[in-house]
Image (cartoon, rainbow, N blue to C red):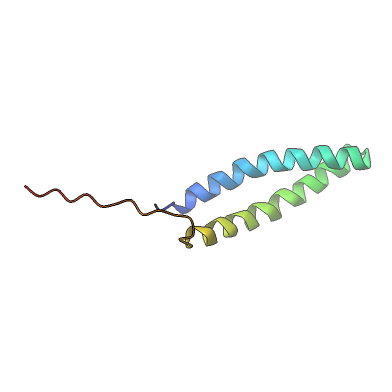
Length: 76
């Protein structure tokens, strides 16, 4: 099975949304400063989205754990 690059982009955006909300919440609890927490979350979302995209594309090239579907050839 093959994934298109845009699928990786959509997955990166959805995952980073969840991850960034978590980072902002944790940063707020640690710093007590919402502006600082949002700043940390903003930097984090940009860097981790790029890292995730390249990580996902690299894994798409690896066959580890994939099963090839058998080709059914019908002859009449």
